[in-house]
Image 1 (spheres, rainbow, N blue to C red):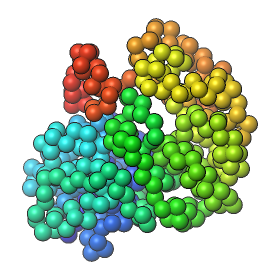
Image 2 (image 1 turned 180 degrees about the horizontal axis):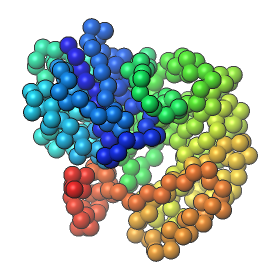
Image 3 (image 1 turned 30 degrees about the horizontal axis):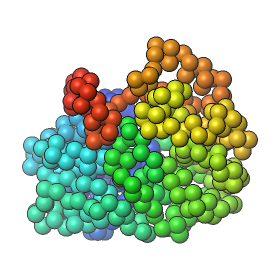
Length: 357
């Protein structure tokens, strides 16, 4: 049996900064050794639609849904079954089911072995669903699936999933709810030991979702000679001990969602707690003291933004010496409170914008 993994791309051109899609490393680890596996990353290479295969597995984000459906159509036309998983099929299972032979709802660790077994027997079920928080311990990615591909130098590692906050625009909370599942600490440390001397990016949506676990992780990284980055929330400044450990044990950069300089916007997006950390400049100073660069993320388009928001936010980013800044237009992801509110207020130009040309 042969399985083809596919990671769709948002654009038509090749990506210069693509990182390893961890999901396929994890699924490769869970696949029986007698199954042949191949990965095609649409961001890096053309997809050989005519290459023989017995099953195609596609991970789908809302941004890549249209492209994923196009890819699936090519294979299904040839009679090759397609299974889709990831955020978009989980948030919109009825839609995704129209474009695939099977969908995996939720995290795939617990359902993938059954999907493989059913595909081998020619008896794929339409839907496979994991329970919230069901994540297997002891599963680290089989990185050999990425061999020969021109991925960026950062090695992705994931400790946990979900986020304890519930911002109304966030697909992470729509996917996981209150669940913040964690991998076994020993397993994560073993994986990091194999990456000594390299650059690591923690793929957690918020590495501080469990501060006690984060402290244990940071202490265990001492002496590994790993330079690493992560995504964290601004409330890190209330934990100077954690900040010290991050700076002492290799953290060189952190992505922080400031989102807006307007308190009314933060209230609307249910992120007013950002303001509880004190003045942004004071908070940044505490992080910079530890030698940690900050990648600031902002979103434009909430109701209290005026035409001056662009210049003010840019000026703040420059004045604050942010190493990088990301300016995002407000995008209503399906199944989020933001999407439901805008739809109810009849403010969506397109209900399914992700499929519109």
